[in-house]
Length: 281
Image (tube, rainbow, N blue to C red; front, side, top):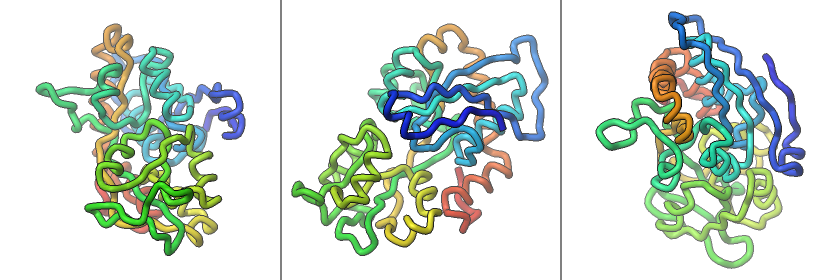
């Protein structure tokens, strides 16, 4: 596996990890090479998903399968704090974003796959939700309809990383949420120190944390999945104007790779801590 390792600590100290990692295709099915088949695509990704090298998360695994179907596609992925990634992509510093749900605010600056005036979820990477991760036996709770056990006093609010779309959803259902955390490291540190009552995390991120025995011993997921959404690879307006045919091919290849049996199994195992094979992307 190709890549340069970069400690998360230096990510936050220097503002960005200047890591460009060429994902190596692992699929066995090959698309026919055409005259326009070679293409370098520069994406940023939420650093909470981990470093690209040797990353078996759903997003990175699926994009390796996309490369298996499009051998000439070279992906360069830079992990950044989420708000910084979105901002840089919107300003054209990257060609697009790896794994972003649709919001009207994002769609004003980034281009998503569309069909009949609506975002085309058939071209998604997968569906993911958020979860409430809390200390075991904690009072903050989500029952599928409303939040209870949160408040404005110190240590009673929920925490979320800045830029997460789940914040408005949670507040509308009764939660007090602090979204001042610039990256997942500061959010999780606040949870460990008891400065927040729970953390609103992407489903995959929480599943990864709970594979660590120390996290699994002390923390738990409260209630059902929150706000399941389709996640995409939106692109910059500049790239869409310059390369619409290649972008359309990218989205179509993502759709094809998502439906392979190998990815379906990987997705289900990754999102269930290795316990289930029936979750569909």
